[in-house]
Image 1 (spheres, rainbow, N blue to C red):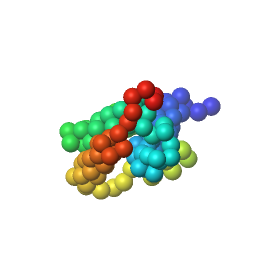
Image 2 (spheres, rainbow, N blue to C red; image 1 turned 90 degrees about the vertical axis):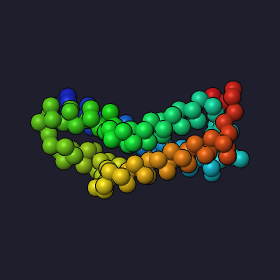
Image 3 (cartoon, rainbow, N blue to C red; image 1 turned 135 degrees about the vertical axis):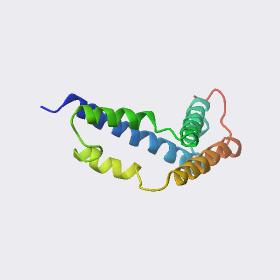
Image 4 (cartoon, helix red, strand yellow; image 1 turned 90 degrees about the horizontal axis):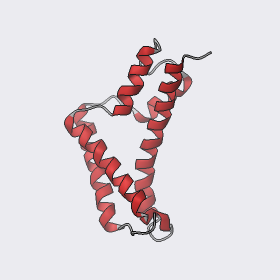
Length: 131
């Protein structure tokens, strides 16, 4: 039977990858689907998207790790695992979203992407009453 802390850590990593996909693919969807997909103008969806990206950029500016990363790593330690090296899910998904680069490059990338998401708010404005 698997260690519950390790299973939860894997689940958090899957959630983390899902959030990264939501932010990146959501921005792409706004521009690609602005005239084809009415849901990309949904107010709640867009507000969630922009607030999430601003939160990510703000974390980077403050030098803070993502709370999901902190939680996942704590669970891995509790499970007796080394960070990012024990399970199949952890091994492969972590390589999709974690890179070895100087901190300033993440701050710059998150800030630029937040700027893109904010710009999308004005270029492809959401509509109230669409979700």
